[in-house]
Length: 481
Ligand code: NAD
Image (tube, rainbow, N blue to C red):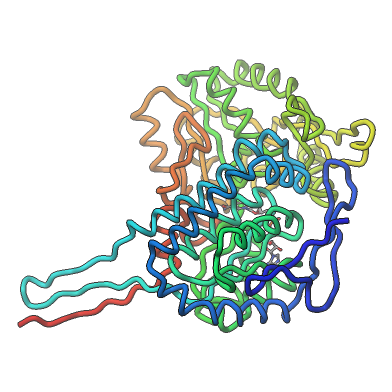
């Protein structure tokens, strides 16, 4: 049995209370490691370490901070195979996906901010000869980073990299459901020579460790990615303490397909945008709206492709769909499928748990599921499912599809498929989402603002937006006459 450890003050250490939690391999439904069941005392130790590291880290020339982060990025890339295998075992995702997406992107996140900080400049405002203002961008101090289970190392590093690059010290908590790569990452931080206390990783449950980070008076900014309900809980505690907050929350993203699209491309990309990572990506398009003239053609092509997806051992290179992350999550997704049936939906593909053979028999597998015949405003079309389930419905006019698309409380991402660019731009501007992809999905440039509107979040990550978040501007005004 593997015992994970916290990473505090540059040392790997067990939780102070000595307690551990079971960690599951979802592809087999078995416990395969133990993670620290940390509490307030470990968070306190992490804050003390971060505070004492802050002066020297924040005053270190950015070139030196950058070099350490470049080393860390290189170490992630060098350990691609073992990190990808660990991510796949911990999360249930296909190994091929972890190798192609999760781990390379984690290395890019660190590499991106290692160099972005060298180009980050602040502003000055001249007052026509009467005076001049210049703005300093100062690191905040000790910041908290809390991340979810769906893209574990990818999203963990997406927060930590800009925080550290900007000169802050971090107390971070990965999801207790997928803690393994964060633990392996702490070993790489030691290898890269990250000074003790700059990054502290405390493992454990959200309501204990996450809450202790949120409440801690000396952690003055929180960057959180996870569910909308958890985001609200964090905001309730952090807002009256006047903490800076960045919240990346849930989604219910529309995928809008016009009759004049390139149908083959729209179908093949919709397979990924619906079911990549078993549909457990906040950006997945879970509501597909198809213009009436091509509704039947799209549906036929899409269903055919979905039925060809191979559900199986995440380590098999031919597998397209691995396991969902946990037994609880599997039950939740299956309950959502039952609700869709109660609401009058027709299952046109999938709809069931899959029981595989041998040691995978207790794994958490669900068929990729397509549901039609539901109104846009039913619960299935309004609430986040976050699994391998999409709905499909026809529409007649642009006005109608804009109404459907914008009808949910969420506003993270959307996709538009059309060869008419005027229409695409017009529609993009009227969608209430932080991100719009035209004729593509999940094409990412790390310099762009990333985040959602409405219940999908507050603030933006990515590019200099994250460096703005992790620094405090101070304006200095000089009279020169
Ligand atoms: P979650 O909200 O249950 O957990 C996220 C993190 O918050 C975990 O580390 C958890 O331990 C911690 N947490 C739980 N309760 C807490 C509390 N009271 N105080 C502080 N921390 C607490 O989310 P999840 O199930 O891990 O992830 C799935 C959700 O994340 C989905 O809703 C998905 O849409 C969302 N998500 C959003 C984005 C985005 O960029 N907008 C990206 C990925 C996932």
